[in-house]
Length: 468
Ligand code: UDP
Image (tube, rainbow, N blue to C red; front, side, top):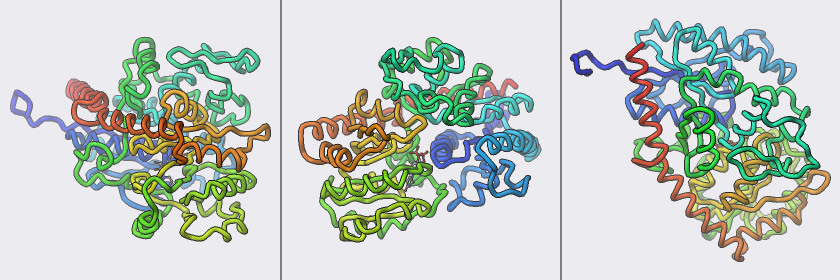
């Protein structure tokens, strides 16, 4: 009730992630935090994606769909990524507006659209429909500050490779190869470049700016961005509450899987047969497309370490495994799965190290579960994340690539042994990982930096909504 005795308006937000696993997970999790604070949340996925989901999100969150053009054009596959982006924007804008109008008529009118930074057109639609627009960035502040500087012409491209370090305010000096691949390898991925840079074309019009990171992790750049760009709020980490503060009952998993995970019992039985911190967990996330020669080097490198390993190889990638080698390793020493519940694996005592592509979700999950990493970045923001893992947070070792861009088996072996081999570097990264785990959990626990930011965001949203 408000002071006049009228029932208080329950603010309703529509949450719109970019249609990929690493974007849906954090935005769905953030929605759960909002629902726990009394807001109504509706998650909108694209029709095509919703059809390939393997579980429904938490029942307290409504699920709706918009079109990405697949279902309209009748084609299952866009001709190119450019074509996909265009159809997503065109079909998505129209069907998002229709969805907003439908929700308005449903008895639970909408107050705000919380949209993924990769979908800046959603802000234009929200404004046309007279709703608040809240941008949610699923990459680090460091990475986004680089993109911001490029978009505003403050970091001229191509980078002056011969002149040494790249300087961006709030960030440590970066080698050009430590900036995101879209910036460093200019021209190689034009559609992706446009997508990450265009995030900042209309950002100044957003009512709130949220980041899936936490203050302590990126203090310097967050202080700079808050003082110079917008009053941003960090709201992470966004893992299920079970792995953090345990304050949200039943929030034990992300609840959306674009691939079918192998059952937990089979995996945990295998893990249980190994001593604590002995197993190397290897995953390159939902999108990486490794070269067969890289598969071979990685497999041989893992075999050289003599550590047991659990490797996620999506079914479409399994033909790239070196069959003879894999067949020669006993099943107790190597478990290959197409997809798993990564959080359950990282939380297992048996895991000693995570060989990762450094997608931000994987990095944050490793931080929250205290698992040291071997960083093997492939593209996009992963090289920048890997730089922070090794040099800033000091929770892992970066594998270096040779001139051909290949991480050799010897290099894989060296890095894994450094992390799990019991030497000084391994002890140092394990200790930092333990400390960062505590800091990450404290950020989202009651009174922590992100917990306070979410409270303030909800209060501001409700007061804006009630004055509309
Ligand atoms: N993931 C999972 N099972 C797997 C591999 C990955 O559930 O077998 C999840 C992982 O926990 C993370 C997401 O998929 O939340 C991958 O996101 P990330 O940002 O690490 O990489 P991307 O897939 O976007 O490259």
